[in-house]
Image (tube, rainbow, N blue to C red):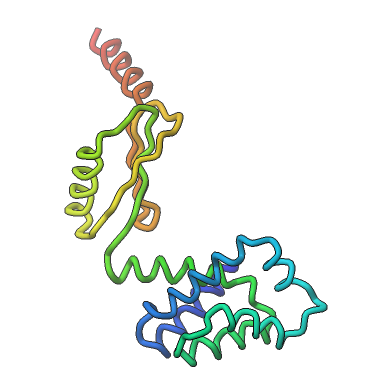
Length: 175
């Protein structure tokens, strides 16, 4: 539900600002603050006035000359939608990735994957999807290799167990 609301807000911001690049930096910074428990307690506290909440959020982006973003943050505070800021930042990140065709993904495997293999996979997927894809390796307990580029909706996996089972089935069928 939050994501749908965030998409509408981002669409409105994009139409008023033209580009989300400057605004996204602000919203990424604000979204990071929501990882701080003290900050969340203050923002969610009903005893803190809306003016104080707006001042806290606007002080975090002090030095920004984007009046549209400042007014937007005041609007979020006024309508008790401050908790949606992390969703707005995520929708902005996805929108910017889609417009620039720059995506990031993860390679999961239980064995080490060489850096050159990571570069080759990034380049190959980039050519396939006509995009710039950067991958990073994460060692995980997965029997094989799995490549996940979430923003593109792409997941490729090769499981050693599954391949072995398919080979056995193929041999049994051949006999």
